[in-house]
Image (tube, rainbow, N blue to C red; front, side):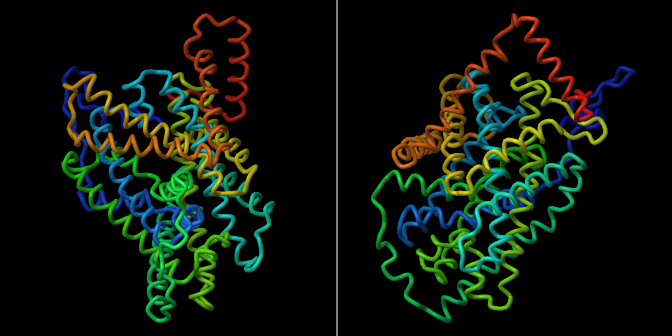
Length: 485
């Protein structure tokens, strides 16, 4: 959503008033290193750690290798975050990956990023979070049964639609709810780690003997296991958006990354050790809600608090994701890269209502399956492609424009490693998950004809323009919306 005229005025480094003089205005930088670390932790911690452990261990087949995957995912996220810190300070434009890809490779690849983000990443992530919430809500009612598929999808659909309505009605409600939801995330992780290690010391059962027994040697399965792990670290590529608010950002941003991502990695590994201290790999794979199964085993009469806290975490993460992701769709439409009607805001609520509703419809379509791990693979394969393209753009711009101002400049070895790992993660799952790979690439490439029709096609016939005008007018009337001033 665009800034108000006052906010735009204050954000500008040079402000000119009606009398002529120019006043220099500087943003007040409120955030230090500690606040930066706290924000990063808040971005990354979410519902992934309560669902992804199952996806990792069922692919790799052993306790020991699953823990290695979690460590490697943390290292990969740290390298990626440092690459994005350089990108964000070298290409100081709004739009994140869209801006980086556009700067390095031009308009078609950046359009395809927007296309894939709005048709794949965003609605799929909404569906995953909705299904996670639904699973933890109904799991206590079906303790020893397979969760009813229709009930899970209906509850997920209701949660997504309700939170879309809340964001359309008043975005401030979403922001005010976050303190409660953050408590749920932290409380659930603390309970899992403390209870798991207490169980490990009180009732040692030898579950960590022969921890590499059964490890898969299939590179495709190993690559797919990384998708579940990386999903839990989602958000590391948003870290450079806080540059404007950080004091001494070119020192504090890398420091915040060096502190926070290893800390997240340690906490995630501890949580997985806690899970595995209580549950066998077979029990984890069989569970639809690992934290609930864990709580039933170790918390006794207090086991009800685990699904409550995890459901709060998933619900809060879904709410924020719906709020923030609609802005990417909105910005893309405003820049002429997406249907124009998605660039409108409700004139009373000042929210991008058409974008919110559009993404809500796509999210509901993703609920055609309730298999969270298929959705994670489906989403992550294409997302990894564009993240690799963004970081590849960093390498390309180092060669193409070596004199570009780079306030943060990392070793060229890091982006090279990152891109090679991403290529590994994209290429190897092709024979393990051919359908998901094919669908993701098909939807991404389907954006090419739309690019030519909506961006390059200048001499459009009158009937086409009239049709677009009619649809646009109908959307404006339906949602009481108009272009932002």
